[in-house]
Amino acid sequence: MRNRENRALRPGWGGPRRLTTLRVFASVQDRRKGFLLAGGATFPCALGRSGIGTLKREGDGLTPRTALPLRSVMFRADRIGRPHTLLPLRTIRPRDAWCDDVADRRYNRLIDRPPGEAEERLTRDDHLYDVIVELGWNDAPVIRGRGSAIFWHLARPGFTPTAGCVAVERHVFAKVLPRLARNCRILVR
Image (cartoon, rainbow, N blue to C red; front, top):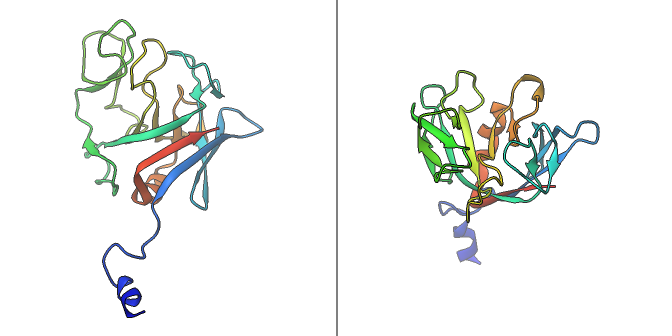
């Protein structure tokens, strides 16, 4: 009995349980908006301009209906403080981009800013990518044209649609990121 009582005093014991699954579902009123469930909390979110779907293709605006593992967190150190998370963490650099060119061998990967227009720059003038969680979509293995850069990022005012990502307000990251387990996933339904 005494051993059990001492466990509560040990670091890392008895703290809040880490979240292993977040859930996302579309609103019945607007398929481009939805809700993110994290533990017992529910937050509004923006979804892709085409809603949630199963046959994802590059540029179609669908948020894929699947379980998406959370790969890493990237953030703009010049705009926000270092997020508290157990996930791999990295600062967004000025030359960082995500390759969405289906003809490029680096398709659906973080790259040093390439020449040309077929790229998604992570350093943006707006604040959408001040914090990004890379979601594991079409990355094991990469299939060209199946869609790239599915992120969980910051929402625009009014939760206007994304290009296929899940977007929330800034305060949601501050509340949820510290509670995520390393093996957390977003279940989009």
